[in-house]
Amino acid sequence: MSYKLPVGALRFNTDSAKLEYFDGNQYVNITTDSPEQNTGGTRGIIAGGMTPSIDNVIQFVTISTTGNSANFGDLTQSRFYPAGFASRTRAVCGGGASPTIRDTIDFGTISSTGNFADFGNLTAAKRDMGAASNSTRGLFMCGGTPSFVNNIDYITIASTGDAVDFGDNNDVISALGASSSPTRALMFGGTSPAAINQISYVEISTQGNGADFGDLTETVNNTDGCSNAVRSLRMGGNNGSGQVATIDFVTIAQLGNATDFGDLISATQQGAAISSPTRGVLAGGYSPSSNQDKIDYVQIMTEGNAVDFGDLLGIRREMSGCSNGHGGLG
Image 1 (cartoon, one colour):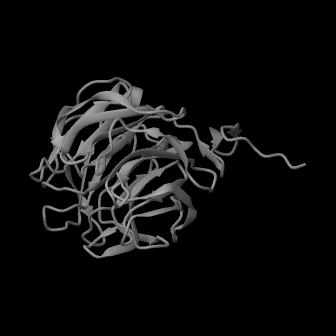
Image 2: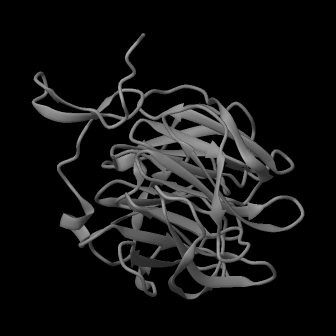
């Protein structure tokens, strides 16, 4: 009988002199940095969107608490349907439309407040992308130019400059959700050209094409995703007939189909999902006939329905979301 190493197993790497844990695929470093040190708790960043006018406002919340969002600053230009990811220290927002589709990438320092600055450009102007990262590398995945595309761009978050080609997904998709562990980025749902239930993945540290992971519990586009290092959530969306309130989950290290988690407070699409190691949060969106200012949250490692977190500064949809405590950071 073979022994299966459990997820979370610890070892001390005598070559690197670092403590590591097993994430289900490989050993990865245990970080010595934390959002508690930098921002007093995991900070979620919500940027851009429509109110219904196109907006450049950036907001933030502290995910470990509940309450209303506060103003952070502004993007370099107003945009809806941008995509975002973060390291422990830096938030990145790329693409979107205003209404012309953009290749702009902005960045800001999460621990401070203030306006974002120019980072560089995508390989092509795109909107409706999925975005995910680990602590060093961020991926902008698929999207619309406006034609649906399957290419994946990447950047090194700590530097500035233009994005570089990573590879291709196994299908052309727009309006998808995304999340990550420290090693793996997931893409789920989207339009291709109708709503789909596909989950794909790539290994973040390499370059290459997407592969099949499994299926969601339903076909859905305009959906959102977030994760901790172990579990990924798909939250809300549109199944082709209207908005849905459903939440799915998968274990990121294990290929397979998603399982029902629970429901949002109300059916919602086009929100912004952010997460800490314990909480998944969905802010704003369209539900079911108007823009929303509500913020929902769930406990990622339990299953059940979302509860109220607070409100955004105003109604909005089609924003980007990221945090300095998401699953890609360990």
